[in-house]
Structures are given as C-alpha cells and as structure tokens.
Length: 116
Image (cartoon, rainbow, N blue to C red; front, side, top):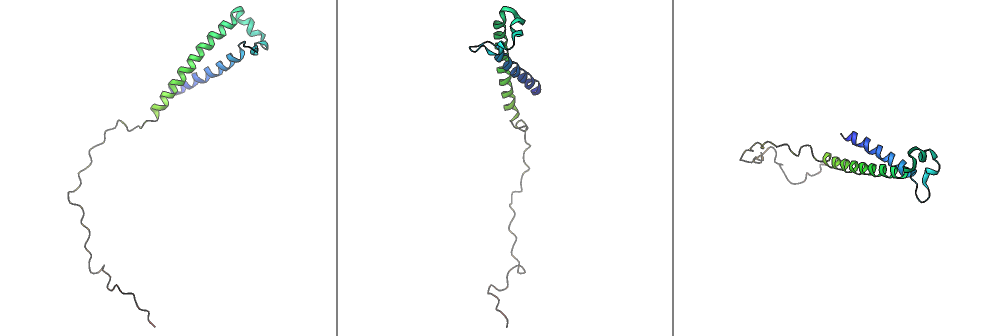
C-alpha cells in the first residue's frame, strides 16, 4: 500500500512541476518555447492547465497526508497489543548469604614479613 501511494505521490510531483512551468505567468512561462501546447487545447488551454494543476495539487496533498499517517503508524511498537503472561512467583525467602567458613577466612591480617 505504501509503495502505491509513493508512486502516486512521485507522479503527481513530476506532473505538477511540468504543468507549473508550462503555464503562462507574468513572464509568459515556458509556453513561449512550446507553441504546440497552446494549439493542443485551443483557446481554453489556460483554464484546462489551471484545472489539472488544482486536481493534481489535491492529489499531492492527500498523498502527503496519507504517507505521514502511515509513517506514524509504522513507528509504533509491534508489541503494543501483546499481553504479557503473569510472571512466575518468586520464592518467599530470599537467598541467605553463604556463611564464611574457616577455610575462606584469612589466617592472619598482619602483613607478611620479608625473609632474609
């Protein structure tokens, strides 16, 4: 689904750029260079190009919103709706520390004297 919307979005972008550059504006646009575009639709060329630009801008806007919504939904955790099983009960008595045995106790806390 995302791929289809991206294809529609890119198509709308490319066609919008082309239509905006072709339309006659204050500086006459690129229509002066392409005289075939003027004769293609007759006297109503400007109205037709304006209508197509409006339709494609709406398609562009809707595709932008839908891509943004889909992006937000994909960034959510996949584990958000998974119920976690109850944890196993721990033994009530905590582990007692091991008693220190005489073998592990140091025999003498005094430093060892150097033998000569």
